[in-house]
Image 1 (cartoon, one colour):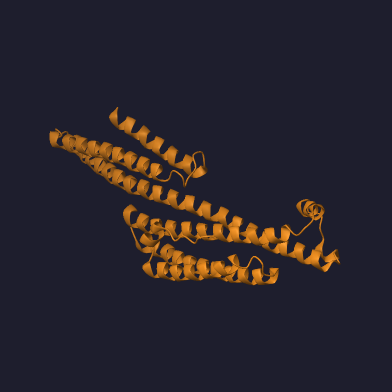
Image 2 (tube, rainbow, N blue to C red):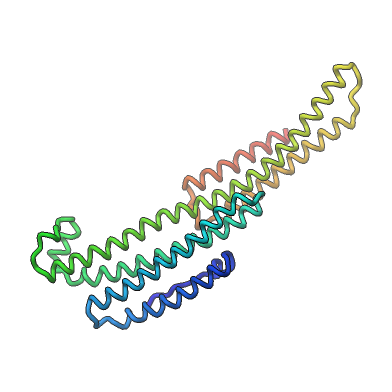
Length: 278
């Protein structure tokens, strides 16, 4: 039989109440699947009833997960700074990964049900289905009609799950990109504040020079200190960005739009570091 795994990461990341609900749903799922798994000799209608119950489970599970995901997304408006934002994003990531497992399991279930009907079709009719040359409404044979309808129904459900999976995988990549960009934003703010300090000292130096007075060395030392802090900020930013990029290996594929955006941002910071050193 299949297993409904609730990952350690999911249990650690999300609200415990959601984890408890999903664990309860997990037990229901295992019970229903066991019912189906032991009914191989039963009629197709009995198997279909078991799968309908499974479908209710998957729908309920998604509803619970999506509800909590919506709460986390709303909570993003009330947190500030990369650390706080990325904590919420990590929780969102855990929920999306759980949704991915849910839809993957559902697709497998629906594929198995579709195969039961598929196996009852002759090679001739299997070929027609594959080529899209079947109009079920024009078929008078009741058994053939039922098998074609059953296969179409469950195959479509499996395909719907795969469409959802494509969207969820894209959402997961976007979450990782958002975490990366939050890190960039934090360090950029720090760098810009230091730059503002440098500009303020420049303005003061300009005023002193306009008066024909000698600029104290302390002004230049302060300015150099700020330049050094900018360089340190950029080096810390590069390290944090590289660590974040490394952490998403397996989630964000090399060469994807998200991966290229991250690599491009790191290269920009490396260029800034070179400029600061010259």
